[in-house]
Image (cartoon, rainbow over all chains, first blue to last red; front, top):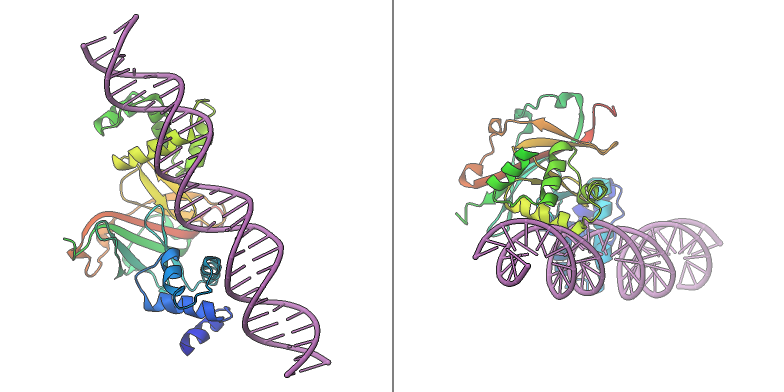
Length: 132
Length: 132
DNA sequence: TTTCTAATTTGTAATCGTTACAATTTTATT
DNA sequence: AATAAAATTGTAACGATTACAAATTAGAAA
């Protein structure tokens, strides 16, 4: 908890109660939640919480680069406090999103060396181990 | 044009005038357009065109697997009639989306062999060759 | 502590992309 | 030409996100 406060400060985010709680939620729940989920869970702990605050906060986190959006489905944005480059897999059956370590330097992409790459994203869709 | 009709039929899509035009647009404009762009361009040629038809048609194309959605930005869905696995790069400056050939078999991802992968997606963000 | 100012949070209303749905038009079949 | 089915259209509804102004909170200065 103290660590989260420090981490937010280091990244230029003033650690308000709501911001700490939202970031903490993302750290503890690595299931890549949607805004709606974050809100529904936290409003139980913080009854005055507004959904706008969740949106504002996530937007701020994005700007400061301490969370990344996960885009797999056309109609949902998920958030991840793990900002290292890693792959995601979404199961078509159970809907769960899994993380996978990936070494992108293995990948040689012709022509890309002339571009300045700032972010790399990889994701897969299919049926997960459990559902198979 | 005749080819497009055939291609649609082969994939279970009855080739109506609108469907042909929309697919043709995606084939000719490999700039990964958004729904809005497709509609704005085609309504000039087909004045009676409805945006709902564009949505319906793209949804049908998705179901039949002849287009794929490109998700890079949180608030926009782009469409691509090239359904082979390839990478995308979106320039933060000019907004253009580039294609890159990629050989995913180079990539070894530990644990993924136990999952059934149906789709693979890779994209990058940064500054493109032109804008550098 | 008290006061003042700035930052944050909140709630409501507005906006935008997308979908639902019923009516109309087109296409295919008899 | 008549009929039925499919596709298209336009409008209304919906849901996620944003804008905005008011209320609250936090921090600094007196």
